[in-house]
Image: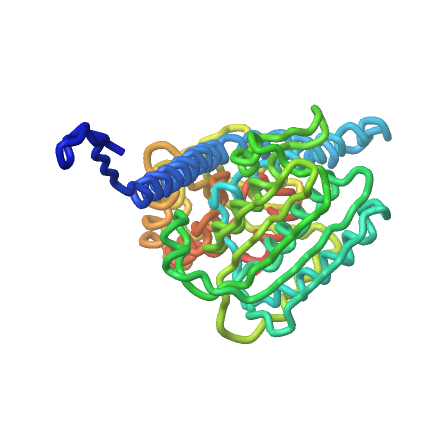
Length: 415
């Protein structure tokens, strides 16, 4: 508002005029919200890139620790206490490997194996599990749309989303309360998608998970999806539950929001793109072998880490295989030229200095198109398994692997 002193009909007067800037203020506020969301997405992407980058070295270290423990367990003469210690080491390696996988899930460095999934069925299954595992003073309610559209998703990862959100709600209700799962069909229009970073307009299945717990303080709410951020006491949580949920939802091209108020509970809304097609029944995993497989073939191991070469060689030799080793792609090619058809299988790391695993795989295919190659890597597996199989690999073995996984992979390829 601007006011000017004037004379009107011979008498002093004030002339005022104003400009309605409501639209401009609303546009500025909307721009600030979008900038905040973009900056948050960029921060999450940086952490995700870091997680993907460290996975190779960390998984290699886990492979070394786990491998030596497994080899020691093969030795005769161990007493009960020594076996207990070794199994404790293997359990710690397993938990560390799961931690890396959670980081990779958050960073979307793992590829979901998607199929048409009935979200209602997944909710019912998880609700039954939670009923047996969470305190009895927490009631579980469901309100599921009977005509819910199927989603194109990895059922295992959707189960993890439901379990993580359920456990998060449990922790927010130490004195009891209500945990509620709801589903319905929604359509996110262009206006909504324009206000959210990375959200496409279209049909979605909405999963709403709410609780009557303590709620989340306003100053904490913007950080809940950040990895390792937790308000729990030391030792009570890793801070990866919600970040894993975030990563899975984003990997499925979905969207997640959280509404909460201290003392009033929390509501998570997960939007997952609807899919066309029939709902899959899931695939049962093949039964594992009753005893460790072995053989007498010649295997060439290729890895730039001496400890990992020693571990894999020891594992294979224990079960009858003749093993050659190489510490680079160039050395592997020289050995293959020297021994020719005597080599029955190559197991090769992807990330090596000099000629990397992919280039070596191409050269091996040119040298002997019938020579089977298993790719083993500590890098995140997002899309890599399909890529190396298209390039001619016969198998894919992510690190850290267990002895049974190594022997089974070798047996399956050679047989």
